Image 1: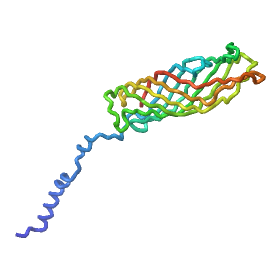
Image 2: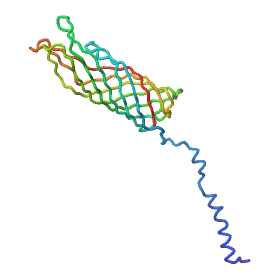
Image 3: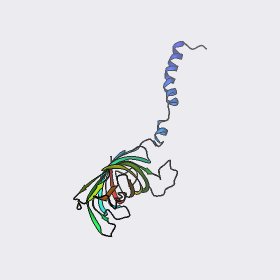
Image 4: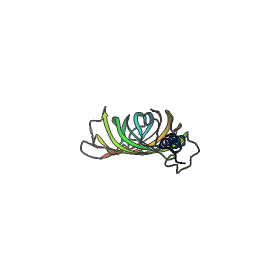
Length: 225
């Protein structure tokens, strides 16, 4: 028996919603898939304080210092930071005859950019059982500026650039889950400083040099948003 055309048309209209439902993608299944591209709390402000040790010759006294950093998470395992630190200490130099000469007070400013790599989160290559305690690798470079005040010995000449390149590297242990808004850490960083101070007498006799390389051991707190 041949059906009327109007009956066939009504049947097609009634069946089309059911076919659309069957062919629609399963959105619930997609929602269950973890989105690795989402990184919460990308931005960060870090305050830190440290103990600084200037070179092995004891020309520059050990001192405390600190600074601020602003960070941005490029992905789950790499963070880019820019920061500034300041230190103030005294300098002295042992003369050729064994006497110690006061060179004045040193104020040192460091401006830098650095990368912090969470080695436990690099494509999950390293299995790490404690996500709340993560080791970091630190590397960066910047510019250091020194300022000398209260020079006690006018018979001495101090020469050298006020500013120079800094290269820094070290490591840290950070406490707190990667997605936490507040984390804490302990860090050790060595700084190679390019603007050493050259010291000589007025007659350029017995020249010497004060090495401004230093390393720091400090603590920090991070606020993420």
